[in-house]
Image (cartoon, rainbow, N blue to C red; front, side):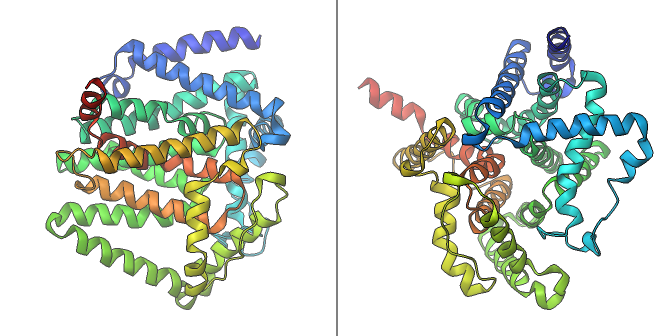
Length: 422
């Protein structure tokens, strides 16, 4: 039965990919759209396969835990729908809803897992509760985020259409981590929708009801599935709006907003003790330090929630979030792939320095500042709070498209090809 459902839904969803106007407007052929969708499905299947056969080494248990939880919640949904829905708003802790960014006794920390499990329970009603059939629908939704980035970045970097398109579709860790049933695919799509709606609204100098709804829905998804991303996203959106409005003062606006956000971050416990952001980051690091990740967990200096503490941990943070895993950290297939990808980024950076396309300045457009600001903020958050290699690679996957694609699109590939021919 699972095979029949998988083939039937694969055909139906592939047809749907070619019929939806949003996908067709990307400028891709029907064959290309189907191939990209099937590529994501294949990555999602591989992700699930690793979760079965590689769990203990690759730290891939979560995806199947979500699946099992979805099957259990499906029974509750069918027998007691009121309880099914009420559990989403029930706070089992005293003042747990006030602990927005905390790891312990936090309604919001529990909500991200509960929401995904309950979403899978609803999906199980039409998929028969088969994991790999769920992968099809998950990646149909995930394709929206990929096409959003594709439409924005190919419009922004129109002089490098091939390099831009290949990077968006084939960036290894993005393809892998956003295609498996986990939170990354949802977050990637949410960020993609926000980027798409805002970019083309600014281009058209007006906001449609659909685009406003897309932004609000995406912000809600981020609030539910990884609320601390809002701390990176909202200031970046403000930066985008200001740079769009005052294009001749980009540098001054960027530095002023960065300084203001930094000041608010460290003054947050004085403004309101319930929103102690430095302490929340330090507690998040402690929560990861308590996890038993074996060789995937790296020894790190504990973070002191003070300006000096963050400054002291900054070099460690950048190392963790940008250059890990090192070769010495390679223990299995996943860590080897992640290590090779990091080497690939380093080579791209060297090519960008040596063969930068002077006609394609970056950052230049307002969207560049937004994508760069989001990426930097997420990278720093990862570095200050996470010491587990698997989590580091997974968490940073949602911003790599925004960070790496402009780098690739700003390289003069024709000049490189001419040099190779000569």
